Length: 500
Image 1 (cartoon, helix red, strand yellow):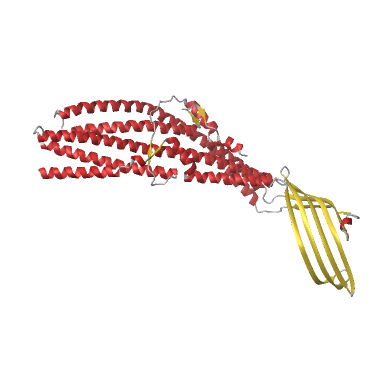
Image 2 (cartoon, one colour):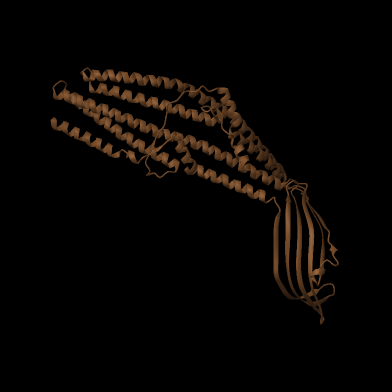
């Protein structure tokens, strides 16, 4: 029997040393607060980085679109153009040989007109040519400079302003990207907070398990001395050894759970998985009285998802304009006025200028489209109706979520008080029964139950405090109001407009 007991003790010691070897080296760990974790996630969280890059992409698209509305300068050059060909003159019904050498360049300044979707351009074409023609043995030649300067206006009519609509769509896309980025930040804050407190709870549970192991070790030594002094039955020693093995196994399980929770947190933070961290947090809370009506109104007036639905409705209206323009009656007007001059001498180009006004009107008249336009308009109207229904449902969902979180907060305030009292009662109960155990009035199994009860009560109390903090964060995200600081969160559209 002594040999069997010795094997059990050696096995327990082996498990204990294995647990100690698995514990992370504390001096190499990086202390991490919730604020530091959120700051790290702001820069390194993969989802948040992708959302931020998407926002920057839409911002650059908006910058490019606004730049396209400014004056554009262009220069087209034809440094050399030479040709020699045999041609037929229909007017004179005879063949002739033509040899041409010319060079030219066109400089243009064009200004889009956002208000009317037209464009006004100032165009100047300067060139020089050496032209020779031979007709029935007679040579004709011309060598001269020429310059064509004119102002041109093009304007679509009987249609919608495509340029202005394109700008509005890009602005909506940019604002929508900003909203998605802000929502991703809030979701990341929620996710990081949950994972941070999961690590904290794993650390807390490990500390409680170590304390339980220490108490169990002391109980084991006490019962061992009693058995050796023939004051207790040997069966009590066997139970104490089993309790000690279970406590050591619990510590080992808590170590594994802690390391897994840390790896998940480091992955979300974008940190190397081999970096050692230890979270520190103050989970003590002062329950806050939250006005339900105020929380609901703040959510309905500030939630960014509502603005997203508004953007969807406005984009639907723009899409309706585009849909109605299918097979539309439309026209284009082109008007230009200027002068052209030519001369063999560069300084005399405009000695005898010629005015060259131009005007052109073109119309596109649809005749029959087999009902395509009518069907597409109806489909777009249905899409608009769906968007409005989604907006109405979203407002109901927001109010419902806020009310549910508010009720959970009120319930958690009660649970925290109960959990705190349960810990005090469990501590008193354990101390009383530990004395009884020392005096031999309780068995090892019974004192183990009181020890487990105390550990569970401590874990439940810590979890209740963390649950309250998390629900308070959920209420902050749902209502966009920080009730701890008693201040609203700045709506994202104001931040986006600041970058316009």
